[in-house]
Image (cartoon, rainbow, N blue to C red; front, side, top):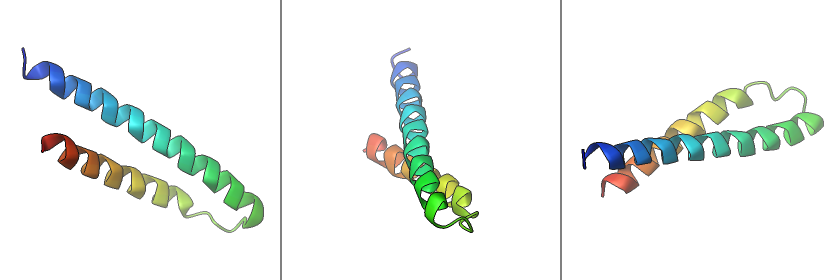
Length: 63
C-alpha cells in the first residue's frame, strides 16, 4: 500500500499541472488568435507542451 499511495498522488499532481498548463497556454492562444487569426495549429503545440511537461515532471519525481 505504501507504494500505491505516492504514485496516485504523483498522478493527481501531474494531471492538475497539465490542466493548469493547458488552460494557461489556451489563454495565450486566445490572445494570439485575437491578433493572428491564422494561428490554427497552436492546439497541437498545447498538446506537445503538455506531453513535455508530463515527461519532465515524471523524471523529476522519479529522482
